[in-house]
Length: 336
Image (cartoon, rainbow, N blue to C red):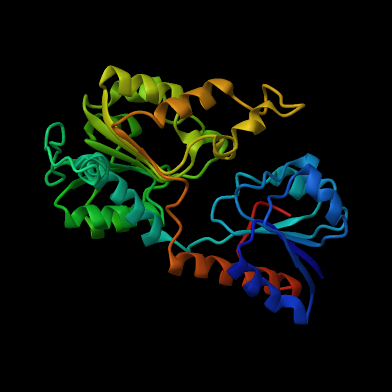
């Protein structure tokens, strides 16, 4: 089969090229978009990361496409409706980074709790003053967890070690896990009202878009902390800015923001043909405001990025491709 792998680093290319004994394989370090798609019209299997936005305008340029093997757990960057209508299967990597992402979320929490970024920057300048660096303890605080899948449950396990209380919301409660890990379920509003720290672990689907907005921030405790390592559009960013400015939120730790690729490449905002539907300029401005808040830590969608996790990602992706080619597909999402 003809396979093209986008957004690759050198070590990923080496792994993907092991498929060459049975398939025709090419790799590209760039993202897949409408412009680069034209060069690969005969592709049967695509593999990308989350920065390639696979909408109908891109996918329609692949008349022979049979499989998209995304190197991620989330697949909100793929038009599943188009894939279903056109008989294209989509496979993901479902469980590469439970501990990886949860540990990063807790690292963000510890960093904002103890003002670590400012403390380190200050001492590097030779300033050892403690003024303004007083933090808060996590012991006996309440962690509110939105989404108790594998990552959410791992977050709860870590919180137990810090002596925190845990309360959670999920559309599909896992009562066995609640009993085993010592947390309780409640409605979303009750979790928001109880949490000293709110951490988000839900997928980006239409039902979770702007799940946390002005109304939800109003329900939270004054001085609460928000941690988001899930997806950027789960939080209404202008509402988050308002909550921080008003003091409703004490701090935030974020590994994801809406429209991350545009923040990385601001010139893209102004390219010919950009539309208001494609880019929410209010959100983009709010993103840039967040980057300048001293009580906000933003990391570059890096929660997944450990040696062991990325190895699992590429190994599972190769397995997904091999199993599909052998007519034994695995890890499929959506409907074909």
